[in-house]
Image (tube, rainbow over all chains, first blue to last red; front, side):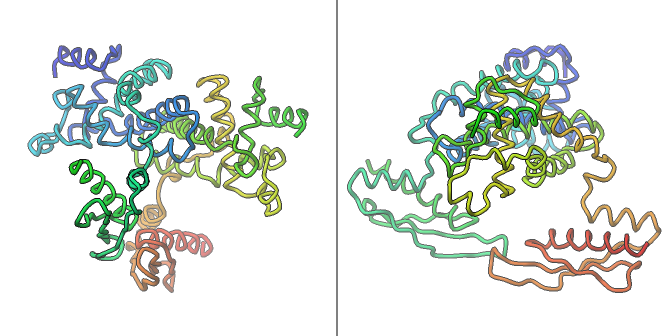
Length: 227
Length: 227
């Protein structure tokens, strides 16, 4: 990889590395070299969790720690991180082993998410906490400002219940209709029926609670389409 | 609670709060007041995880992120935090509701551990990252310096295997001998036999892997007694 392209990456992330070996390490997948981003990603992951925890703590003084934790888990999820990685076009700068490259590793969400965390760790090691936090908050600014304290931290079942109550409808009915699979790898299928939809909607999950949440999410989507 | 006793607590933790309302919040259990330590504990928990992650990252340059994570989970466990809380005699400063107090809440390990995390969050909010990190590292110094990079991060099965190899013995044999209990609450019983012990040693766990680790741990203990 040429230095020019690393310069390009620095522009995209808004941070110029003095020590390019740190940056190179951050974009190196374990399939490429033993000197890869796995350890620095461990550090970056903990920084990300802390920086977002503080941002939420300050932004939402009125909500409890369970909701703070729930909002954070969405913000720091692999899915969100992979989206940020796409914004930085990180796939272009990844150093992957041949096998990983051939199997599309530069588009793998988990690989991309890991690089975002590794970059956070690398910035911290080079420039300390304040600079690192400022960068992370800049990357997350649109997502943090889009958060709606009223709804974003509520789970799907709660949101569905509130929507039905607001429309003076009876509460939803959840029914476990199937469990399948061997012990500890079971799948639960739950059907959720509401008065506003003629047929019930089913969804599955690795626990009954997860299946219920997934079914509630599906019903919320279906209700949006009906509107 | 008198101000004198809060002064005493500050001495024990090695940090003097300018804003005593932060300290008071940190020692307030949810059973006592709505203005309790739960939110600040969420923040402190993430700081603790990050500060210990960095300490381990720097201290053990040669070990991988899986082992870093394993060592950290022991250091930041409720058990370790409760021990630190006892060193600070935190139970004496806790603000508990009457019911909690009567049921021995001031000795409850999880309650005490939460206060340690809340104190970390409170120090951060008042004095920033560097002061907070310095305090946490001081509290954890004896535990960090006692870590042995050679063994502390290895699981029991690995340690048993290495011990047997060093003594030129065959590898241990693990056998699942029972699974009991309803789905998702199953208990697995595994027997581990090694050439150095005449009878096999059984242990149980909530997964086959955990039962194997527990059995390996028992065998390691038994081998120490034989020596």
